[in-house]
Amino acid sequence: MCPAQLMSAPLQHVLFKLATEPQEIEQIHRLNYRTFVEEIPQHAPNPEGRLVDRFHDENTYVIGVADGRVVAMLALRGKRPFSLDAKLPDLDNHLPPGRHVVEVRLLAVEPDRRRGPVFHQLFVFAAEHCLAQGYDLAIISGTTRQIKLYRHVGFEPFGPLVGKEGAQFQPMFLTLEAFVERARSGRSLRKFARVMPSHEPINFLPGPVAMTPAVIAAFSRPPESHRGRAFQDDFLALRARLARFAGAERVQIVLGSGSLGTDCIGAQLSLLGGRGVILSNGEFGERLAAHAARFALDFAHVRADWGHVFSRGEIAAQLDREPAARWLWAVHHETSSGVLNDLVMLRELCAARGIRLSIDCISSIGSVAVNLAGVWLATGVSGKGLGAYPGLALVFHGDLLQADSGRVPRYLDLANWDSAGGIPFTHSSNLVRALDAALTEAEAEGPARFTRIARLATDLRTGFRKLGFAIVAPDAHACPAIVTIAMSEPGAAARLGDRLERAGFILSYRSRYLMDRNWIQACLMGAVTEADVTALLDALARENAAAPSLHFAGNEDSLVGK
Figure 1 (cartoon, rainbow, N blue to C red):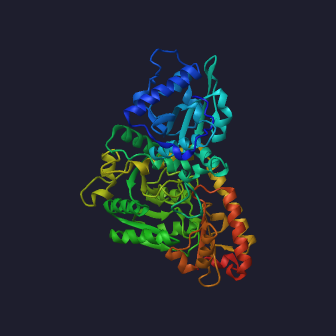
Figure 2: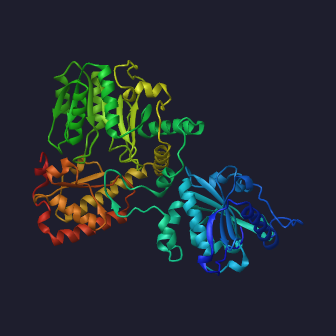
Figure 3: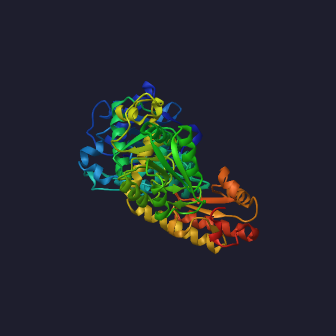
């Protein structure tokens, strides 16, 4: 790449665009020659005075044009092998995994257009194009003459120098996250911020959750056919990775919400037949019963107060009263209260009695470590603990699916999905690519992910209590991903939520079941940081000082069942 000193000509005289016209392409070849033959002796001279790049037919050129003259250019190429692959055979070992990579090459600027803002605008236009194509990692071979400039943009060096004497280059990469940070904090790059995804205000919702730049960029890639070979291969690999992540045998990725996944389980239970048991200690246990009723299932509905935790003795006694029970359906993380029901205990009680266990893990997968070994059916979603966009229901299962009998709608028949390789109908490549990126991040973080969420939850719960707020779920049985607090003054939860939203913090309080109980929730399912938690507690302290009657002043034990 050439020295990319900033240019002096007035910015309004330069048009930035993708090269499309024959005369623009010809000027690119000649600027390429002047830069990488005459200025940087990377290639041998030739009498034509033009240099056609070996990847020319695959390059996308971003150019700056002044009065019909190409005065600045760079080339983008996302097809492997990259030019750096030939120089560094182990290139992938140097790069962050799971990225959509573009190689930036042939950065060239006419000498009379240097020392000004044009370089930044060239880069802005290139960044806009890369975002539209879904790229979240850029690699370059940066001339050693301009390492400081590349670092200023956010590039990080890796590997040894490449090239020859007089034309040496440093391999470097730039992540989307690093570029976002530089764009927001650096004065000279501030214009970049308008093209970068923003996580403001701070999102403490249970969905849609705050997402990382890599997930947003993956969603922005051009749509792909669900019948394309590359998409189908990646989709199959994603299903296998999701199953491993949750400790399940298999999973179907269904285009729809978590409620659709729940209906898929209801359909399977209707095919299984027999009597079952549904446990409910919150809103989402009640919803399981509502789904079951619509499938005309025969079941005992075991209710407990919201915030109550089922004991082993309670469930064992209920199952003993239902000796004919063939299945049990329950919620793992009861999102309404924040209680985490004991999945291991449920699995053991069901296994001892030959009962098939189905579990709603919609809010727990990705938020806490989940092991679905021994579970017959379980639901999850893309847009909560896994940190991707909403819109994909995950239904985990083993090999004991009820056969496609024609008795339930085709879209709800898991056997139909399984026999079609997971794609019997049209799928969204954008949602799938975003989920793939989110899972890649979760896999890379490993168990530290759950430790981090638990630490943030401890800070949040401690801070709430210091401010006088009462927490619904007891510490010993709480899911770290959601902290639900109860308010004393009627309507106080909604008023506090409104004020926090105006202050830049989005909490969950508008769901009917929360409004009925005057509860408000802070959720840690997405890309929430320690700084975000601190900022929220500071904002709550200010609100609490302004209206001290809002907090719940009673004993937390009295909250169960409210």
